[in-house]
Length: 100
Image 1 (cartoon, rainbow, N blue to C red):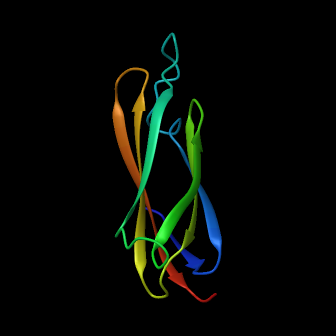
Image 2 (cartoon, rainbow, N blue to C red; image 1 turned 90 degrees about the vertical axis):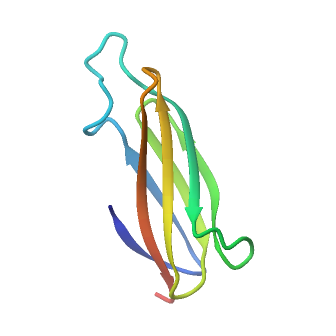
């Protein structure tokens, strides 16, 4: 599980590449992402907690932009996807908010 530091006043963008060790791209047709849902734990709410500002996905990757957070707090940014073959997966990046 990746761990990053983030300034509480800034934002980070993070991408998971599901083509690496998950999607069956050799199948015909290729397996692709059909849904991508992001959440942050703990959910401290606005304006003090970390928040998802934007998210997107394509056939193989899911990207999120996260801002905010309380200095010293650790947050888990979790992505749950579903594929065209009806498979699901969940991946997490963990960050600590602080003054960098």
